[in-house]
Image (cartoon, one colour):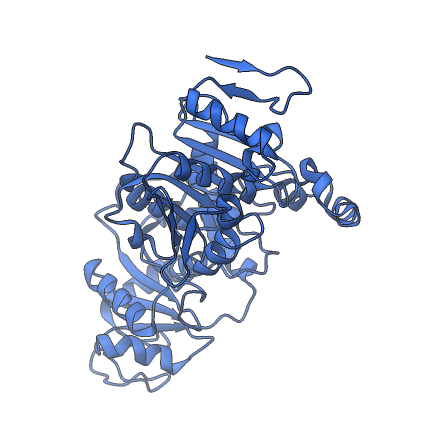
Length: 458
């Protein structure tokens, strides 16, 4: 049972009748030195009522999402001794924003806390511990016995679905009701869509815009944002906090992918290829290397079978692509060589010298390359086998006008372009000839070098 304070009281939101919570809030109302959350929070920034396990705050930039997340987690850790975690896209984000930032955990905890910056660990006087974890290192959650968590900017997490289901949720296992607060600017993605639309009472959703926090933001900045972005798609997402399923101008849609999805790949695939779109650099902040496996049947349908993309060193992605080549019994590796050229091919062949590698070079824009592949889905001839959430998120959220490089999408386009280009006569030639690994030219079986480009034949 809850009661609501009369207008003008310190707390206008529902007040818990739990004695410990009620005593805590009364002390906060009397002591200006008490932690700022929820004493200074707007009503909508306070913990919602209900038996929820996830509090999802979808709001525009400047709304005060970090204030809500850090305040809630600090309050939980002070109230109940246990292990907690705060997760952000990178360790720099979790350290500089979620812990040490002006709305971070240190200001919320006020005193009686020890911060080990090198280990990323907060120790409270009551014995609680809060671990700072990067979304790029989900394995740090394995073996934890957590009572609660705060995920900041979940929409920007790399592989958010896997981190949530394979690392975070299994670690939330201590206490009567382990809970999570998610604070994020909405970005289209399978996990956020699932959380935002769940209607079983386990998820409480708070929505808000940048302008809800106008009292604490620069009037000039707000006027500029309104003038520049009001009514635009980016304004709806970044300012109004609206969760948009698909990017404007995206070549694929959620309905398009779902309506053509198949459970298993056909057993009569005529060709299978592994396509690689290699990252220029390797490291925590580098682009991903796209590694996609796809196949084609005799009726012209194409199937995206597997996605092995990720952030790898050159040796690691070469090994991953080589393993996929063997596992799926592929007949070629398609590799984009705009950056790296022969070095990229040599890295691949260092793992498997006999690997058949076909070079492709991007001489046209991404949209021109992607549009014919998108058309396969419009015709019902393109299919994703099972579920490939990270690839699918790129397909429905990438706009041809976006500056980002969609590595999984690029690799898929290279694979399907090669497969779709194969005509019946080419298939016949492939059955008779030795194909050149460099230029894909058919050669008589007795030739040991390509008659077109002089590349050794494998």
